[in-house]
Image (cartoon, rainbow, N blue to C red; front, side, top):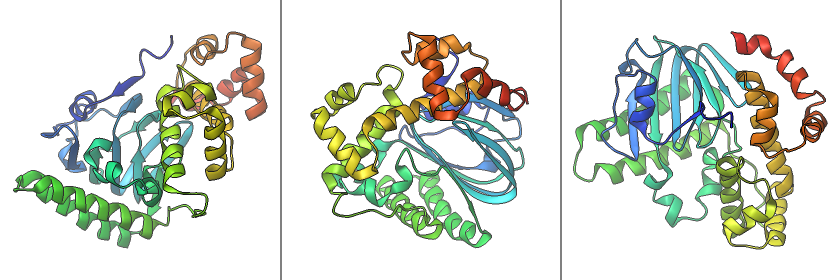
Length: 306
């Protein structure tokens, strides 16, 4: 398998250690810090990785390059919001002079995710398929930074009931981000019942976490304890795509990322995604991209070498 070197970080401090940052988390489910506290010795190029937790970065005047899957985002002394979501393939080049904040949290920290089945609809920024990078104005940066400072104040002072207060501030942050940055999706309320919202959200999350062990709709239906027919009905209603189309899209996205950002043999990549026939893999990829895997890699090879 070619993925042994693509690390999946499950703990905040494991990530900080790998990045050679000075910050450390005192809590296993939530961490917040200022970029300037990381230290200038942080490694410049963070190789391809995944996490099992969320990160929401608020950046100001940053010169920053990052790839989320095969899409490269560049900042040149601008303000931006960056969302790292569990299971994504991520790579970034750091700026020792960056300013702003990072909020890290695990889904288990947000009780609203357990108590409110509509949370996936309300907070679309947590959806695995929504935009992960948004340029913002200085005014929006200033407004959001005030909320980050409130969270940081509670976190660093460890007041009584600080964690519930932090959770409330995070909910406020989510609502502010979705309103100010207009990243919420237009949703048909008739189709997006709480039950369908929950199933679709869980299905998307399962794809990102299980794609290299299963690409069968039946397997995902079994994981969700529903019939394949009902999974197809629900996902098609909510997304206007079939479960198989979403699975195939994610395979293409991950394969493109590996072709662009690694030198893994194409045959190993095909095997990792359960293509036993190399010609089948090549045809599958070319149908989606109009390029063979080798043509795609050669086209983006200069990006990888940089």
